[in-house]
Every structure is written in structure tokens, then in C-alpha cells.
Image (cartoon, rainbow, N blue to C red; front, side, top):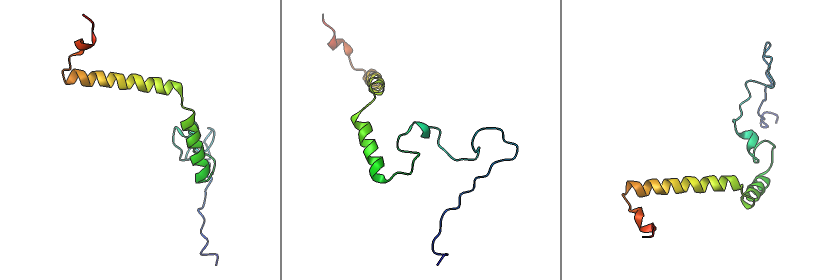
Length: 91
């Protein structure tokens, strides 16, 4: 029954004249080192738990940058529709 149990074959090819670190043919995304859900072989429950933990502890810099971008886009939208911003000024 060995033919029913199929496993993926992993090849660890190292080029003969390659002087760098690691395997140059390893397929990995550029930002995987910064993600908390990639890397270790964890179950779905552990990945979901880490994602919920990240949502509970948001990054303050990201929130500030996101608010600035949203404000700029709102002002651009108001300029495009020719909204009169003088109603916000005091006379």
C-alpha cells in the first residue's frame, strides 16, 4: 500500500559555484519575514489566534498614516466636486 501514501518530494539543490547564503532557488515572498502567520507549520487555530492578537494590539504609526492618507483623499474628492470649503471659516 505504499503507492497510496504520497508525500511531496523536497529537493535541496545547492549550485556548485554559488557563494551566497541559503538556496537561491528557494521560493519565498519578500515580506514573509515580517509576517507573523508565515514560517512555522502551525494549525489554522494558532494562525487565527495570532491574527486576533494583532488586531487587539494595533500599530499606532499605521493608524496615523492611514488617517493622513484618508484626509488627503477626502480633500481631493471635495476639490474635484468643487465643494466650497469657505463654510468652515469664521467671518
